[in-house]
Length: 119
Image 1: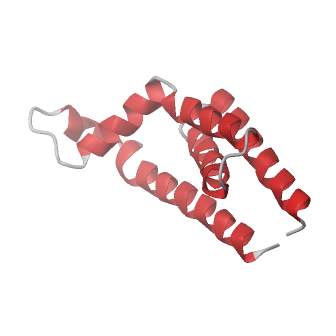
Image 2: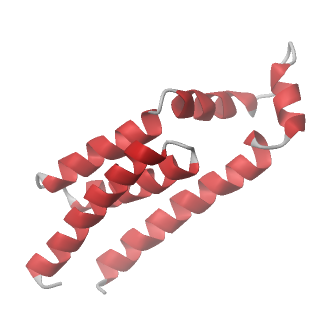
């Protein structure tokens, strides 16, 4: 494994761990749901609301699928890493169908590029 691939995998792990930590702290507890439903919601409710809105409209998965498709057509390395990371985040946010497709396409392009360049 090259240093570039290791850094890419580290970026995927950090993105997924960050999202899972945020979900555990601010999305899943019922206390936060009640606080965000109050007339004067806390500032932490805005990112929570955005996360849930993106989840509801399946935009996490659609973005991952878009990046994954772009990855197959010669996207830069960062886009392939982003496709895998966003695909994993999408699966964690219940956008599993599109997220898994984006993750698979990004990973396929990433692996294909690594084997083709001999790195």
